[in-house]
Length: 341
Image (cartoon, rainbow, N blue to C red):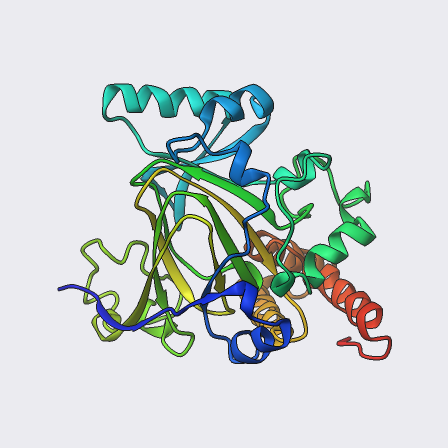
């Protein structure tokens, strides 16, 4: 049985949309939208794209080839995500070109490359005004929590340096069903290529979870078990085709699955601000309570709280203590008077 499509994402000329209009219509209403006209002056759209409109893989090998990145094997599931492999950008490009020459092979998708952190002098793009009220990355840039030797090392994935990423994948690569980290907002800009998005509104996530609300559907186009996920067939999806030089805004709590219809490069940010901070905080509190429940039998231990924090960090990427401290500093720094804790 095919998906039930009940909505489509509108496309708006971003140059004709004021920030106030964007905030009122999309952020405050938590509604997705595709914006055009925001990438015309991006260096990435020139350097990273060949004359034929395909990714300029030679440019990446030549200029960024030694960078170490994480690559997802789209054909291999590992727990709730795709199996991740570490390699250099040059190795990834070589694999891509070999697959093209051979007409097959495994589909590898470069994900979560912290390009801005690694190449701060190379200004590939500028964040569009609509997404610039970014408390998460502002905090990480300004306060440099990742430079704290007690909490961060280059291999420590718990304390993240930023939430700005580059993605690169050939036609057929994809990302399984998920909601974004912290239930943050995200935006994704197609430097080249085309993506197909499938969204589930935040009123329906229970339909893609099992009866215990512990595990969700991995691939909405696979043979989804009706006995394990009894509500799946009731889900009403929204869909959208994102073209080259278009930017999509993904609101909080919208589960989504994404497929590259062509060879694609995209730039992606996660962020939050005053419009969706309550989503983020509610999720962290929920995850904290679940983390403490998992180890309830250890409640008498002196280091029980530390164990809770470690479990929470493993699940969400940030401990509640660090999160509450961060939110306090963000709120005080942004408004001068408000604090969550």
